[in-house]
Length: 274
Image (cartoon, rainbow, N blue to C red; front, top):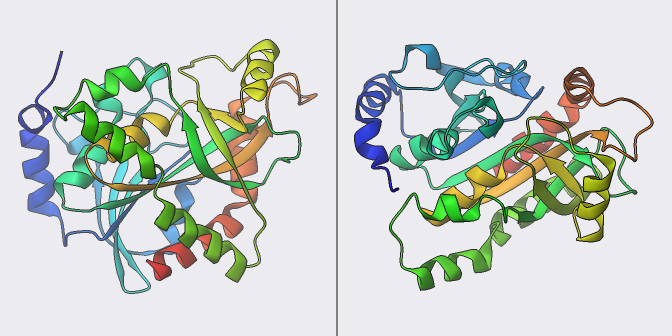
């Protein structure tokens, strides 16, 4: 069933438009453990999502629930410090709300970041990976049903997904900052539990390089409504069956904190290059 998001969130959008200090040029959704990036910016306005009517509260550690308007390198940014996950029990249209808000603020470019488990045997914890493709077969149909777009137009939009232009910007930024940047396919898992070794082995055999429980919903939805999309994963742990350690959210946030300086340098260079 299609949902009129503009009508459902009309009060929320009205409040954000009332409080916004500017229209952003670039948006970023910050993943688990990466929220500290916002503290390194010139913040102009911070809005608690608790104060927005109809905004789903975040229940995950490391997702504080803030919408931040900030500036860096003379660029106007919109940051979502806190993500809405399907495994928290939310509907798909709720999970893509940050992207929908970005779109309604006339921002056409978005960077999606996340903490992910490494499937590629050449990855190590602490690597940054540029997503050159996504696997979202188990969620794509539901996302397409959210909006009215001719099927042929949907197919054409997926020809440049993620944005080849923005991916090139990230590659060049990594070279400039002397950061080793991995590339690969991000595989979406609905969660809420971590994947089994057998599931990881299947993903590996079918070309998965990293796995996580976010990002793909947002990426597909952003693409469908005409936004340029790019995604960077922080490989915070090796996936089940590869790592000798028991997986935990604490390990995810701990590793993300260790690489936050590298992540900050890369993202700021990307922003300055757009």
